[in-house]
Amino acid sequence: MAAHFGRRLRKGATTTAVAAAAVAALSASQAPGVTSAAAGSDGNAAGSTTPPASTATGDSPYYTDLPPLNTPNKPGATPQTPVVTGSSEAGIPATVLDAYKRAEASLTTSDPACRLPWQLLAAIGKVESGHASGGRVSADGTTTSPILGPVLNGVGFANISDTDDGAYDGDRTHDRAVGPMQFIPSTWDGWGQDGNGDGAKDPNNIYDAALAAGKYLCADGRDLSQSAGMERAILSYNHSQEYLRTVLSWFEFYNRGTHEVPDGTGVLPVDRSDDDVTPGTTPTTPVAPGPAPAKPAAAKPPAKPPVPPKPPTPSKPKPGDGTSTPTPTEGVARIEDAASGTLAATAGAEFGERVKVRAENRGGTAVGKADIAFEIVGDTDARFTKGRKKVLVATGADGIAVAPVLRAGEKTGDFTIRVTVNGRNLPGVEYLASVVARQADALERTGGKELTAVTGAEFAEEIELKASLKGATAAGVAVTATMITDAEDPAENTEGPCFKDEDGKSVRSLTGLKTDENGVLVLPKIYADDQAGVFQLRLTTEGGATLTLELKVTAAPVIGTEPVDGTEPAVDPEPQG
Image: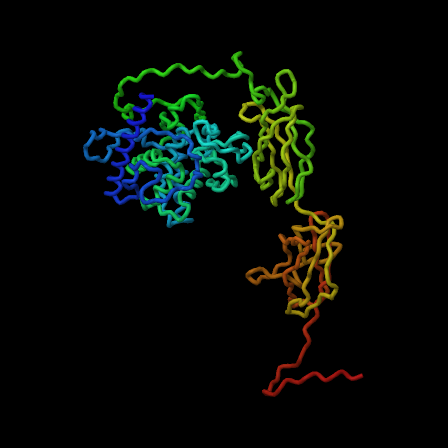
């Protein structure tokens, strides 16, 4: 225990010195930064209110490595501005750096009073994930492997019961921090963003996560150019004074200058706040692809006196080594379709069929209690229960997992349901799903007055329609209205009655009209041109409903002739019998 205390004391002293130096540098430059409260020992930054108990990360562990310094200050000496010597530590992977800067640009437009500096996002991204594991991300910014924090089960960490049914973190019992900026699922549900414009909000995507982090830091009207606002923002992310000091140290470091490095080549930190664990606990470190590179020589701390070795801890048995029994999920060798039906639905309605798969081991025996992931893939707004794109379902005793009810959105077309064994690199199963437009098989006009107008005037009678499907109200049905030449040959008519667009131009065909929740649609006003006669308006819907209406246009009556001597115009005499 003495060795453990000494190590923490030295780490805290070094961090405090760096934070104090950062204060001096920021004060001199008038850049957004910190105050002397950064070195405080209480639970809150001086001059700030207590941040909410529920933080963005659930106070999960983080990397505690500090920026490289030239020469540490001697004890008792006046803190001096750190001199950066580790150029490799100043490198930020290209895609990750772009995500930080894009988030700053977005917040500059949407919340200019916040004054979010991208260097703050970089500092948090550094301590949370080492810039998404050194830039191991795809072209669209998604991490190549999941980055998950420890299980927040109250053993050495916070106790947060599952809030996402395992959709984000793969754990249906407790929550875990997820992705490059380490959001816990409940926070992501409220703050998730689509930072790369792909239509999804993915905590594993650095563009989405960086923008979400920026909005979270800017919450409650914070001004991040003020030290108090910045401190409150950082503490709301992780309620720890050590965390505050570490983030501020990197913030100052990145304010001095950074450079772009290729994705996948960034320097990974190695020291974590959960390196020393209370006896009897077992932390789960975040999953990061590939081994962590060694620290640069410039970043090595001063030599420490030797400490007594810790008693050896028995290694945790691994599945398949003969000392433990694989979990049900680890025992799955393959999954196959279990007689799923055709996946088709009308926009806004539930799919009548649900995806079903069966999990088997190598011997072909059903595997129960295995976690199966169902994920919606493609350009669609269809969602599972509670609006989720991805859900985990445990197989039953028969090895079968059934996806939750799937509801179609308003986007029509095809998309894919992808089914995999959660956390396993096994072939999955994919299903094609289709959404068709809302339909009606009957369309009628309410009201029976004749539709008439004189040339050059508008039709006074309003046209109200009602759509139905198998006798029931058909809400949200798309209706097309077209002026046609003839019922037998319904080509669009270029003369006669017309609609008007927003610029007042004549339009003789309208699409995108929809019935309301009662199946009712009121058509826009119709205008007559200078052509008299009987014309036809054709109305159609998906599902086969068709209705043709007659529009009668008569010539405007002649009131008189133009006078030639300034007198009143003559009036036609009444016709004689």
